Length: 305
Image (cartoon, rainbow, N blue to C red; front, side):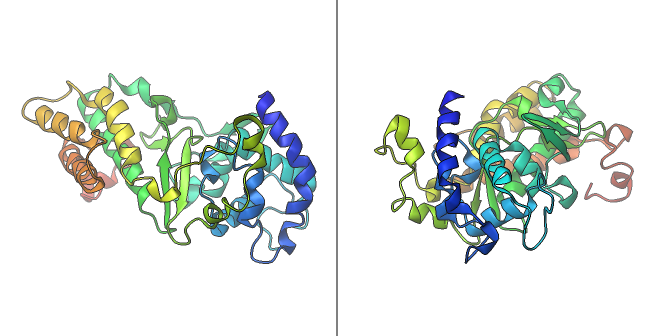
């Protein structure tokens, strides 16, 4: 925490560089101004694009005129609070800029006070490790679907996890699975690419230099593979949920696909194919009953559910 405070304190001296955001030509917050936080451990802005940064500022809810065209009430204090939140825990920012109401697999953001965040309640995935086979199949199917939507979506953002554990995914009372903790989600803009990555060579992050020096270079955004989140989930979460739940030969098929999906030495297409095959195996193992209220009674009349 002392490390964060040092870096944010230096950010106070650099606030004139990002003020006023709505008057800066080319966007609300140019990527080269965001080197204030590039050295902090926040995967959200590891590969920022102009489009992503504009979305962060425009949808930041903790200001008087959130979503307006001019953002006239986006004060110095608001900007510093936004920078600090992005640096310490980007989870509440992600809930605001990619809301569940628009179809993103995230719970509803209700508000925050200091470092206290309020969002809709979910039960963590680890509470379902002993679930019956049909429920385990449903949750695993949903989890693979969530990862697919993070790779391919209408806004052309590629979301990837840098770390996963069972507490990061939660289930609502209607059986719907969501991302419970998005703090380790990184984003790459497939539409615009990462302008800031190009400028990183020109603008070394002075904050990362305070403690670690400027010698260590982050790997290129282009080197993050599509398979990354799938490999993590297939290695660490799905085996806990699916192993030993189903009769032969279905269990053997599931185990084989889990092994292939979790093998990080395989190329992306083979990992993606294994995940797709696993979804096909799990789909008929799900049942249609009121326990799965998020898709019931629709599942009685449409195979899509």
